[in-house]
Image 1 (spheres, one colour):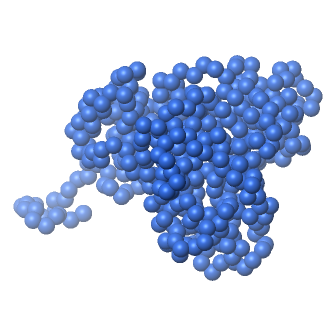
Image 2: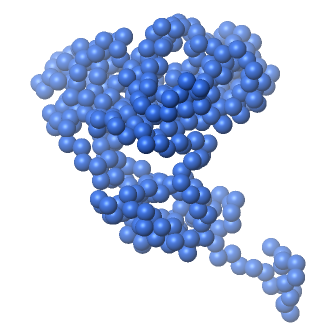
Image 3: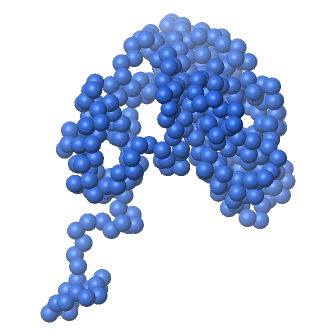
Length: 380
């Protein structure tokens, strides 16, 4: 290092000694997180074991929660004075910038009304459409063609695969508020290593679908019933919705019942995680969570508390389903495939089936001229 301009000293060999990480170095983010965590814990906050970016303090009317993403912080709580005191503390330690009430965070637009909270990524979606030349395109009715299977053999390799990879990456982040494109995006993300022109055409269909309603997003109603319900890949607490990350099973199953049972085990673990998170937020939930499954055999395995010869080859960790059923954490209920919300996350649906699936996702478009400004439209 060299002396900065204007620094006067009689020792020409004197340099500055680093007492902290410089912004931009590899260790900078870790040092920043460690310092912020220590400051919050010293102030009486508790760091969540389920989500390390969540910090909570107090209970009831004195409850305050912080959600942290690098140096962006969301603060929530019923007592505005405690929030002001917290902001003064953070400003004293770190010199923060107060952006006021939540309106835009990490590309997500938030609109609060007396009826609830709407989260959308309209600006982000329009930027994607404009960047790829689809701002004036004709809208598509579905994000992916029904029963069309993408392969790594059809079409020719793209000369600039980075364009495809960048677009798929942006669509993956867009699924935060657009669960209706989850299946299409998940299929497209499987070919980012060697994308072909047929894959690029499929991404263009997703863009044309988004063109029809770029402002559509999730609506969290204030009048919803406090009940945790789940199907594969989809979890709903009242009108609060969360999509589970979908992955291919790494183990070969010898039957569809076994495959469904493994998926049940994964969903049960997700429910347990959500319950732990609710506990950190001082929310008491003591009734069984409903888990829907369209496979009667998988439900029978989960509710059968006696060891069975047909399931002895299944790994012991999958039997967490039986354990949580016995403990009253979850309750397994049958549902037809046509009514299963998760059906739209596992296959491309035709227009009528997709419309029925879309109606159950709790999506609203506050920028649409037909929007009336409230209610629970589209939250069946």
